[in-house]
Length: 297
Image 1 (cartoon, helix red, strand yellow):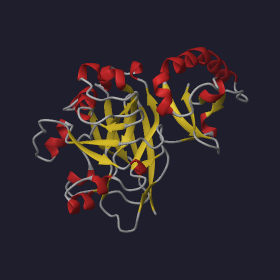
Image 2 (tube, one colour):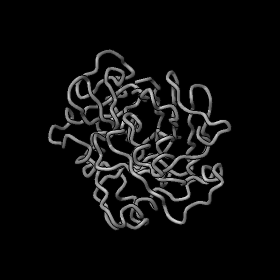
Image 3 (cartoon, helix red, strand yellow):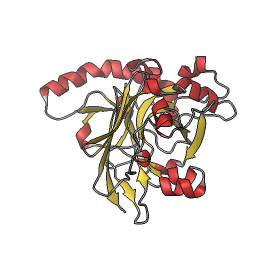
């Protein structure tokens, strides 16, 4: 399933992307369902029943064309938001791709290296990455992100899959100047609009185990900057959930951005940074494609 959060001018609503063109409003399909994914993740069996029941009707509507009766709607008539609204935490992972460590001539860490991004950084698919006038060394990082589905504390890697609602595309936009100045990541990783995410969450049953073996690519305009594969991950999603949950609780909707592969702008010769007018595209195998223009704020 492809889980979405969207709006058609009112409050955010939970839905499903049943195809490239048709969405389904879950609240219209079953008004007894919770109204946010934070609560709905624990009830994905009911969501799956709706998906199974309504998908044939959606296919018929798509073939026939015309107006969309409730609970269906046209995706191009809605605005897709970041799939999770205000997660309690966004966890980033440093040096988690072998090729990214190699381009810096660094040794892979012995354990996952975590940092935090403020949840206020989240941006929608198609939403702008906004650069203030003094932001001149901002980079983009294509990442596979894990979305937590239920509270997790002290979870083993063997059991971690039970706590993952799904996977999504993420762009870990990074203010490199702040990273160097602060000698830590939080400020540089938390600029407003610096966490594009989406356009949806794909449930694990539609992907290979742990979403491994998927190509990860990032284009800056027409230039392919990053071209790797999730097989390059040093620590897999399940290992990351285990390590993160060892001493803190992960809550439904929390995001773990699993790290970026080689090819980022900072480590090119000469370094390359985002400019207003750029369009950044993150594409991850069968997870999806996340596109964001860069603008001056």
